[in-house]
Length: 91
Image (cartoon, rainbow, N blue to C red):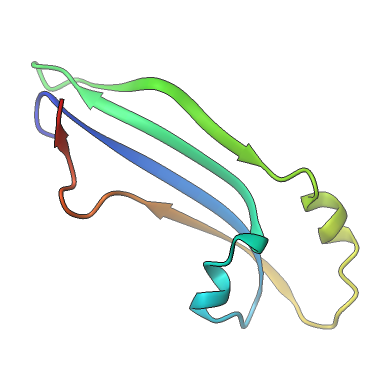
């Protein structure tokens, strides 16, 4: 990360059917956990966690996971997202 810049990192954890399409995976109904972190770099190039950590936890996740009665198998997927263009922005 270049000096005097900032970026973010977002991780989503989903509980989706094994054979779900990409559009189904992006649906918010499968979201179980989300964490959003902001990072900044100093003039010397050291990287710091900036401001607050945002976390979203679905309270229904345990109930829904235990009440699934379909024969369709489910899996946990973890997706990490970062900005593309520009990857870093000046501070």
